[in-house]
Image (cartoon, rainbow, N blue to C red; front, side):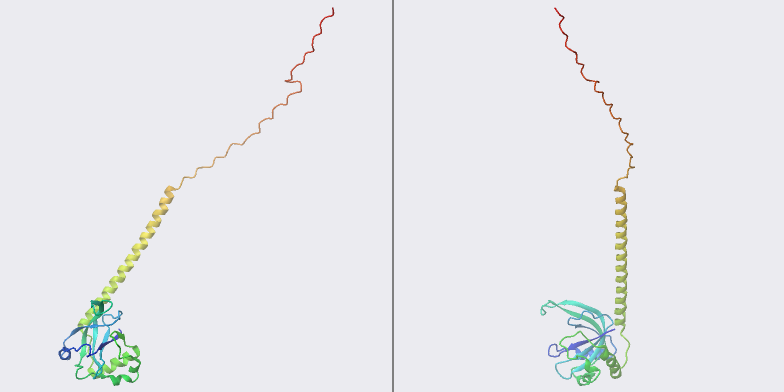
Length: 235
């Protein structure tokens, strides 16, 4: 679980409902609220939030709660990006910061609280672990120790269940892809074997025998016979 800082500036947002919110929370009612969280997208259900008043006195921490819904986009033409990120959370403690705060800003100037940037320009700043532990301890001393609200527990369990289901689905999808690839490889191998030409046995040509050499003709054989010319008889 991580702790985040939510900033409230009365100059930007008067918040006239704060006194009623504080009375209901202190009476034990689970009051839900929505808050902008700047650019922080890593806030998860079950995370801790602390509200800090800035810009004018009394400055300091005046409320705390638990996140019930992770950051989501809300259309807002006042922003260049066209939307603002918001979170839903439920209070576990809240005082009317118009009148007083639980931990004054000056008390946060000492170590280990001094390592944290409290006067942030926007909400969603992570409270450093070195300051978070002592802050939770001091907060419990001043406001009392209370269990996590049921709404926050339910939201955290729902998120964990959804994340586990998504992990299983991703794993199953990966296994299916692996099986499909293996089957495709097998099918291709079988197809290749089917299309391969059959190897015919190599025929050994018959041994060639040397043809007998033609008989040499004699000098007289085949030659034309010459006949001596006949002499005429003597007269």
